[in-house]
Image 1 (tube, rainbow, N blue to C red):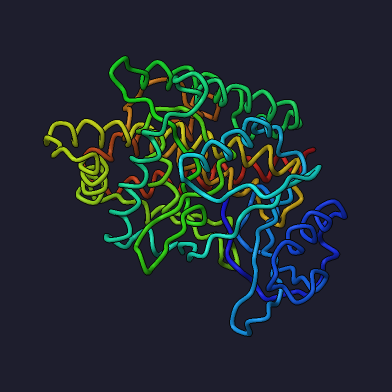
Image 2: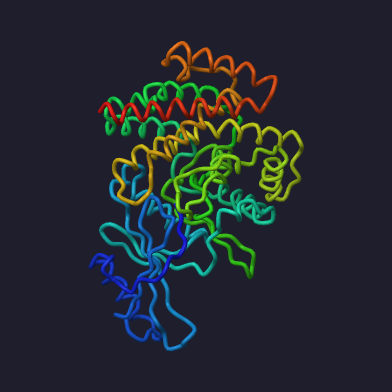
Length: 398
């Protein structure tokens, strides 16, 4: 997940010796660098998988400086992806003219070209002009011919991650997060959502604002950070982008999500999908737009499970200062809250494992929602209250 600059720290102590050797070697090739040892290390905020640093050298031209990016891999994150696959993707993207160039590799990280563009902010995702640019860039990304089998990787990845999460969690945590129930949910979703007619493309799978950069002179976008990229249904990638509109990773509480910022307005979702489809040069039909919008809405569900499970694993293995488990709790809460509206009553749910009183209450509210949409918020609050109570009990009993 992406990053934004924080105040400068003139310390190279953050960097492994191997990384410093690569940086000095690079700087020595530039004639305008005043001193290869006078590098500034600037930690970038907002990265949730790796630690990211901007490296600067003063040059003979006062107003200019040489810059590169250093990425130090987060502890334990190789659970999520094969690092060699990611590097191959990175290099292949560069050949396609996408993203930064790879400048060097060291044991637990790499050095990348610094892109002279602005990283998007959370509010940018709600700007209609920028949203149009993102839709078109996303379509371009999906159409890339990348190595690997052109099939959905989502379901296998979800099952693999779930297995890892269960192995890391204590029994009470498995119970509190309903991880045994989620195994059945994944199978149900795969059956419900898989279709021979759905379009598979090369998906970024983590298209949050911090992974999109804009050159404001040319109005061109660059998509960065391909750790989670793989072939998947394009509807899933769009769904992920919509869900990321609920996040702002640059606040005092970066783990807190505001799902009121999800594009609940159907016209907004239609607009994005229309811009996405028409960027290929052909005017899409109303039925094409409607079909993809409907698919996208369904794919928000596995997206919540994907990042919920990611949050549980990260909470156990990653040392970055971020409340991963609270983030996971919110994603699971949104999954159970949204599922009845997206799929109806398909498959099991937590109601089957809670006491009869709560079950009757939830059933009553679920029925009432058809009479008044606002009741969804009451149902969600009750469910959140119950799940938070379950987490509280698990913490204090263990």
